Length: 423
Ligand code: CMX
Image 1 (cartoon, helix red, strand yellow):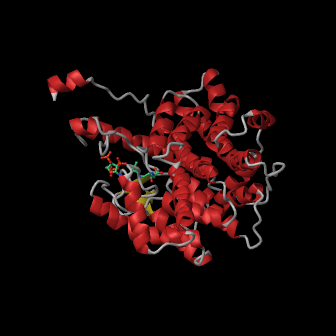
Image 2: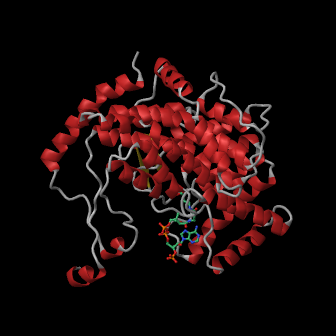
Image 3: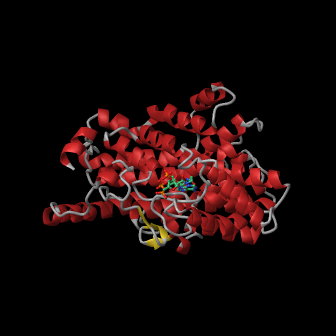
């Protein structure tokens, strides 16, 4: 049987050889230049990182290992995890093996719950989630083996073990945060017979008589898994990991970046915005009313959450996948209807305003309306869902970076005086 470990063991020597050859043949070739504007502009567009798990094309959006996202929306999160790591979809046996490993390791140490229970009642769910991950750092196999003198060639193996154990626990931790923070009653134990995404829905304890919440969670956790290497959370995580900090340190660091309102927290901001519209108009407004509302928000110096992107220049396929899910399952819901109307109204307004380079919706524009419909109304929790999924991309990038022997990240910064004299 080609397990995840076997598949990676077979592929990694080839990947190493390929990179070695590339460096020998093309090591001094130029792939990017940096302007002063880019140095002051968040390094936008500078090509100075390699990430093989996924890429983001401005015109098509997320491509996972060569597969456009909208071609694979039917696969399970576990399958996408395998795909991110290896470049292949698992066969039935390999999938079962990975699911068994995830089920084996989904219990969370008791001290994590003690820490979460002790946190102030008004802690943000992301603070609780990231704290839980950091608290578990003592579990790291990589950390222990490194201290014992692990050979550099084998770093990836210990990182992979940490990756599986950590990913296995995240739905349990996320659901625990939900139940503790929002006083939903006792935590619900994992059901080892369920797949990773369905188990998360089960542990949340939200009624799901038709199993649609389970379907939504599988889709949600699949769609958010990765978005190449340069976004705030991925870049932070892989920078921390490049210092050989273990995945518990590195994922926690990356997710602290995801908690920013311009990044993953936008999904909470987005639903807040949609509910504000519903309450302001006492229901679904007309397109003209909505247009004015959007202009008023822009004129007060605030962004339209869920719209714009640093790389994309098209409607985000993850948005499209959520809209399709909504059309099939909740087409007459007023909050979802406002989300659809915003898709008609916001892009022309942003184009007219002329500032945003991308007037189209991103991943965060639609997801909240679906969660809200299915009973998850506590929107400060939404970025935790994003995090559970995105951790798969982060740890996959870490396994590959260690397998390829990537060194510590260390770009050079310069002073404003240096730029004045040299640019
Ligand atoms: N509403 C209003 N103005 C916007 C805008 C939006 N949705 N998107 C961009 N702009 C503005 C920027 O604020 C910037 O204005 P200033 O020149 O006054 O600073 C200008 O347009 C140019 O920005 P840009 O180059 O198009 O966008 P950036 O790459 O700088 O930023 C992003 C990208 C996502 C931070 C930005 O589009 C934004 O703030 N969007 C709203 C928040 C959001 O939805 N974030 C989630 C992104 C997805 C994710 O990472 O999770």
